[in-house]
Image 1 (cartoon, rainbow, N blue to C red):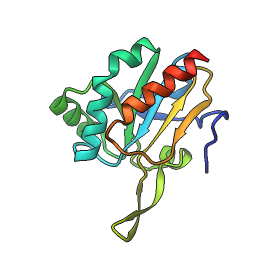
Image 2: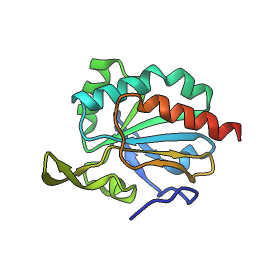
Image 3: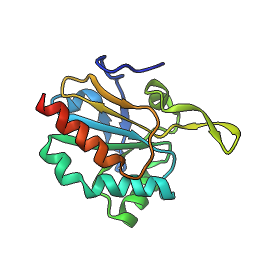
Image 4: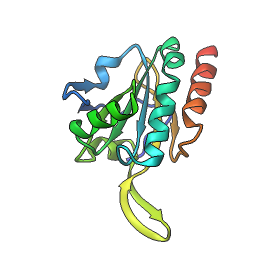
Length: 157
């Protein structure tokens, strides 16, 4: 299922690092940065999570909440958050259902080997619950800043 900019974001309810349920509909009225990453505490995923944490104050000023999502469980998320002093929430999607809805689970080509897995991507959801921007494949370094710039641009229009 492909998601489209301007269309309603697919509904989801997923547990966060504390086991609390996070529902998209409960976040109506806020900008949501929902980013999908393969695994806690791996080099690229750590860069990405730390970059979003470093920019958290700027995102908060823009009325945005940051949610990372991976197949890892809440225990893994808690360790990752504690180890790197992350200030973002991490969601668990071990069945990949939500990732599939968001185009973040599928075929990947790693050094010529085709595998199924998490496609590192980000979706910016507007306060009305529509997809404002979809980054289908992202590079970790500098991505949080790119998201922040797009968010500022969208809010100034």
